[in-house]
Image (cartoon, rainbow, N blue to C red; front, top):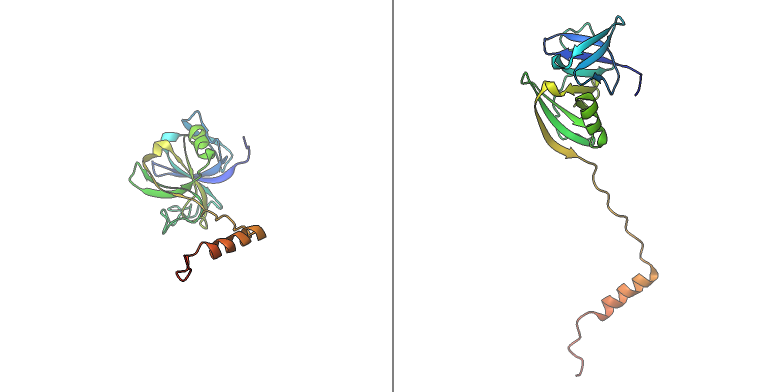
Length: 183
């Protein structure tokens, strides 16, 4: 387990916002609590039922009391370009959030160990780089699409002299029989 902690802003269902530090994975203890290291150096144990979402941010922006995460877009404007599972979450409050989840085994690992989903937000250029949403905060989950890279075509092989000669012979001798030939 990584011991490094990243900057986060925790949004609660009670309307409060908490800033602090959390690890990127294995952040939930006993599938019920979240241990947040706040800005004063204390560890706050938050019940997971009270956490709406955790935003991993570049800067805290605590002067902005309404939207310190600077999460301006909560849905994709068009089909995402990155690979992943395009998910739409509906919170218990009725709000909607879209994001990309990985299509590999880490998705299953995080669901089992962290009791929630890790998503990439619609606008990765914003202050929010990564989002964690606990299962208890989700009322509905929709899989909108599986985004993959376009399949690559097999490279054409250069014809060998034998294959080229056979193709020319087939073309010459497999044509229709001329009608002016005597029987």
